[in-house]
Length: 261
Image 1 (cartoon, rainbow, N blue to C red):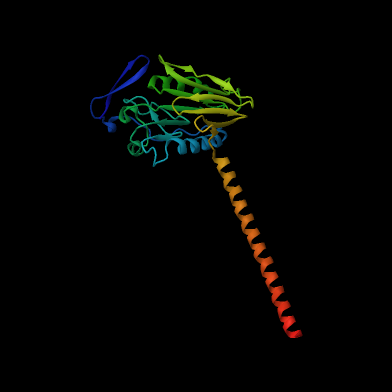
Image 2: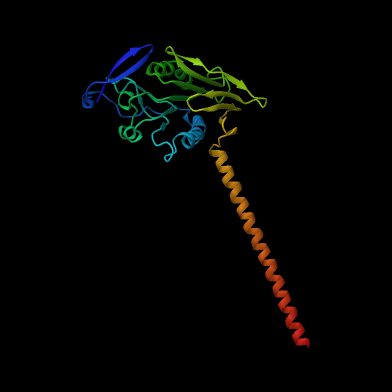
C-alpha cells in the first residue's frame, strides 16, 4: 500500500491509498559518503546507541521499537532520493522486521514518522543539522529533536538542545545545570534526562535516580569484575599453597618423630 501525503498544521499526514510502483521510481541505493569528520562522532554514537538499545529496544521487553543510526529516512513517497540520515532515530510501536527488510524507513509504509531524532555536531554537518534537517524533521512530524555539541558551543552555539514539535516548529525544552556542572534536559519521549558532561553524552533515569551506563562504563565494570575474580582466585591459590606447605611440614615432623622413637 501507499499513501496520499498532505500537509496540515505544518506536518505531513499519511493516509493509505494504493500500491506504490517502486520499480517506476528513480532511486539511487548507494548511501552518501560519510563526512570526513565522522570518526569524531563515532564514540558518542556508539555509547548513545548502546544505552538506548538497552533501555528502549531490548527484544524481550520492547520488540516493536526501532532504533537506528545513519540509515535512510525517506520523506517523499514520489522520490526515494529525498532522504536524510539522522545520527540516531527511534520509533515506538512499529513493525521492526518490515523496516529492516526495506532497508530504509518510509513513514507512509510504517504508518508514522519516528518519535525521536538526535544529531551529534561536527564541522561538516552542524549547519545542516540546525537548518535543513531540522525543517525536514518538523515537516515529517517527528515529535522530539535533540542536538548534542561535543565541543560545548562551537558547532550549535550551545552544548545541548532539545525541542518538542508544536505548530510546525521545535519549541525548546528546559535545560538545567546541576551543582556539579552537568547540563540536563528532560526528554518526554524517552522519559530520561539527556546530559552534557564535559563533552560526554549521558542519560539520567529519574525513576532510579541513576545514570545509565554507557559502553565505556560497562567495559570498566567488566574489567574491574575480572580483576576482582583474578584476585580472589590468586588468593585462593596462595591459601592452598600455604596449607599444602603446612601439611607437608606436619608430615615431615611426624616421620621424624617416628624415626626418632
